[in-house]
Length: 414
Image 1 (cartoon, rainbow, N blue to C red):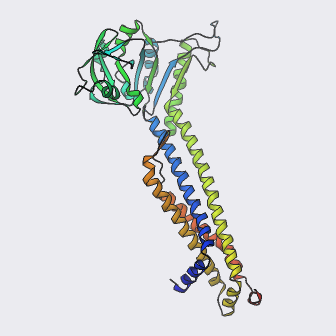
Image 2 (image 1 turned 180 degrees about the vertical axis):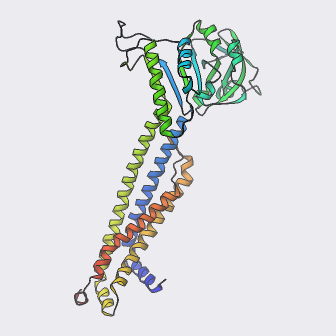
Image 3 (image 1 turned 120 degrees about the horizontal axis):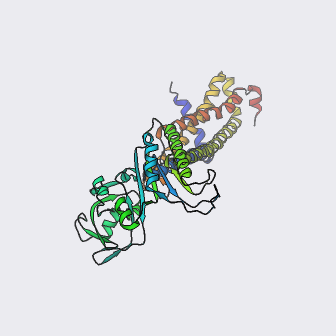
């Protein structure tokens, strides 16, 4: 039942001790504020990591050759491993059931690129049609390389959106335009869009053309794959680790690389890397909860101390109340009421202030690996409710102390 006299007493007490109440409330509000901001940036880091991994397919696995560091089967260390088409074809047959998309890749280096009289400096890569699904980009104009281009050694090219913006400013669309690569004319058939602008500075051509015209051999620089979707994250990670280990084992055996040699053959899994980064963010989230929780506890302890002071100051008043017939539970309720009120108002103030900052400033935060810091409102609101409960517990000890005040002793209090 609403007791207006009780509320009047609370506000009278607050008015008499404005500075003390303000500082106590500030400590509680700052605790909630710090916790919500920390949780928001924890979520922002998770968003940033997800954004980075979305640049490639989540289940992608990449393999590339390096230089061996250990002797093996009579072969000296320092051998440069070279992948060939047979590696790609054999791996595709061996792990067919575990592969969704696959593509080899060749880097075309040390060639001149020209558009009309303009000299261009961009990277050229030879890939297969399925590479677009592995890299995770979209074709915004024209089309990507298809199997006909691959089989017929087509002289076609796909350029990034940044190349279109920088080089083809004077034309409505670059589709159908010709670029000269090492004296050979390639027709632009598509424009692709990447989340990372640096990766839009690439030109893709059919891998068969890259090998036949610029490589003169069947050498490959990387093997890339995506795995079929799994039921949950943990299963996807386990699937990626197993495929990665099997692929690495095959490539090491094929190229006589010592099993314990970490060099020679490298295999990277996006899912495994994502798990590692998510583990880091989860640990940081726990740390943020710990720091915020300690700050809140400090504020709650402050509330408890202030309420002890209030009880001490009102000892005489409490004694008179008891002498007039006030029950112990009414004395306890009076102290708890004030403690909960101060805690709740401070907590919600900190919540509103922190949520407002995240709402308006979060989308504009542009820090590497931190994207749109935010926090679930239900989580933050539940935290404040727990804080209110903590405020009740903070006022319980002073309230019980007030209930035990002896009438005779309280009337002697100065």
